[in-house]
Amino acid sequence: MITSARMAMVDRNAAALGVPRKQLMESSGNAVARAVRERVDPGASVTIVCGRGNNGGDGLAAARFLEEYDLRVALLGRPETISTEIARENWDALAAAEIPAEPCTDSREFSLAGAAAGDGTDSRDGDAPDLVVDAMLGTGVSGAPREPEATAIRAIDDADATVVSVDVPSGVDADTGEAAGVAVDPDAVVTFHDEKPGLADLAADLVVADIGIPAGAELFVGPGDLASVDRDPQSHKGDHGEVLVVGGGPYAGAPALSARAALRAGADLVRVACPESVAREVQGFDENLIVRPFRGEHLGPEHVDRISGLAADHDAVVLGPGLGDADETLDATAEFLADFDGTAVVDADALQIVPEIDTDASLVCTPHQGELRAMGGETADDWRERADLVTEFAADLGHVLLVKGAYDVISDGRTTRVGRTGNPGMTVGGTGDVLAGVTGALVPAQEPVHAAAAAAYANGRAGDAAVEEHGYGLVATDLVDRIPDALRDEGDE
Image 1 (tube, rainbow, N blue to C red):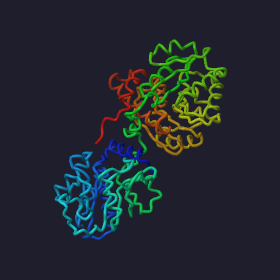
Image 2: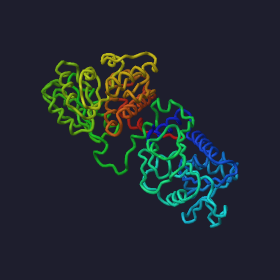
Image 3: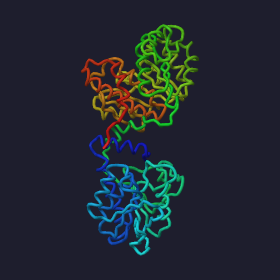
Image 4: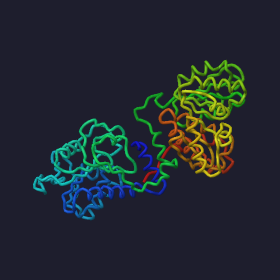
């Protein structure tokens, strides 16, 4: 199954792989037309009721494959309000082919028999069509249907006609199966690529149509994965996460890089818990950081209570940058994680203790391949073989792994993604600290495996932008200021 949000991601990633949404709409329309042919014979009366989005576009595309029927196409609204270019192109294609298609701009004039006859006439003498295609509201729409869709839904449900819904019945939430208002009660649903969770309990025939989305659109991390980074215009301070970076001691730059990257990736507040011996240096990297020092020169068991108290007030913890591998530090790290039940991104020397602890925390571990082997995992030169090994180890570990490399591999043991952004210049020290910070900023808002995938993609894009400007002489700080642009998807078909 695939949720509506993940389906939108797959559509966008498919476009990035060279399979544009327009091509997918053509295949979707063909799949709907096949479902119509299987249910009524040529010459039967068919009405396609289309909304103004891409779901309606699928219906408009289907019409071009059904000219052997007594066909009517109703567009709910004015053609100039069609919301996507590809749906508008399919509307124009019907006009060019002289396929009957008319807009309905007043719900009071809506008629299934006459499709959308704005003059009040009834082209089928009041008889309901043999089959209705519901192509009004798709997977991206939630809430109670408004007019004119609400009137059209009631007319469809009252009609003595076979009903085929496109992707999801209009009015039904694709993820939950619930209806906030009126909803189409179809005889069949033609859904695309994969079943949607909200369709599982419908009393209708379910057809899952392959519309040509390549497997790589789900496997390879792409621009569609950045959709989850979008913000609600009504957001308030704190809605986008507060991150605690626990690091430093032997090193001051690593926790500062992670913290600055978390800010650039959209965290509302970032605090750094570090030894007082490096607190001034960490603060000096960026006035936007909030530093919470603890006594001494490195993390030890005596600091665990303070770190735990701080962590409880944050949405995510980034644990490990610059901590070092002193025995006391590793003992403190293990003690903290054993009692922690929040979300943490674990990096650098802290990684080695993860396989040894029992924790209720949700962890995203970000090792390079050498660190993965130190954790007990296996690796391979071929990225496909490595992906299988990482998936198996993540399942055994019970946490998300983001294994860095020329091809990043991200897995929680069930879902596995592969990232292909980045370049050899990113072997320079500190780029992993940036990645840990970006992951920490993204993980409060979505499932850890998806946050880690988006972070890896954005981190690599930032590195690619830095190399384009600086060549292979880039340094980790070059990535930080490029993170906001790397998290933006500005292109679509």
